[in-house]
Amino acid sequence: MALHPEQLLTFAAVARSGSLTAAARERHLSQPSVSSQLKLLASSVGEPLLIRHRLGMRLTPAGEALLPHAQALGRALEGARLFAAELQGLQRGTLRVVASNTLAAHVLPRALAAFHARHPAVTLNIQTANTHGAVRALLAGETDLALIEGRRSPHRGHTGQRDRP
Image (tube, rainbow, N blue to C red; front, side):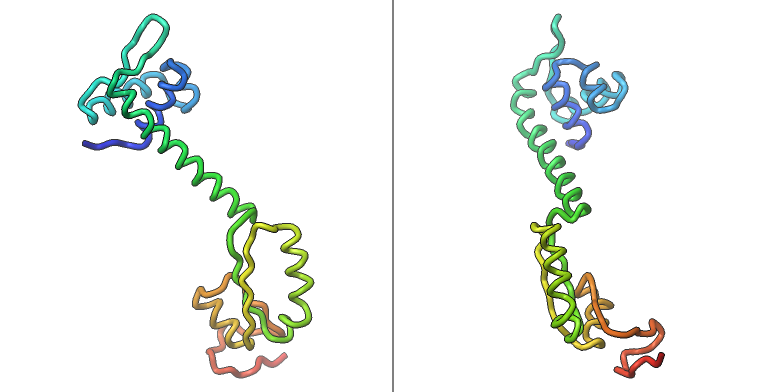
């Protein structure tokens, strides 16, 4: 039995609207595509899910039993979409920052206060390290942002040698 998310979402739209045409509009599908998805879903379930009547569509007992699951899928997907949008908009999440000792002491406090004022739901994870440690953490994927003093050549190995101006 293969249940496909799109079929369940379409089924929930038909149940909500009571109409194939309205569900097709809501899901941005053609009416034949909605009908096809419903037939495939009913075949997978092994029972009819909807019955046509003069005012539209009505759920069968199997459709009534399946509907909460289809609705839960829709809520879960919407929750995932909102979560992704919040992360992209810096509305929540975690920002990991490693800063060299001098920057962490003198520059970072004011910058982080301003960032936190604009994005209060973002958790800040701050660590201090020397320049080599900050760059190593960034390259290892252990931090999202490394703030260092001076410049570091991308071609230099991790020897701890200082860059020359």
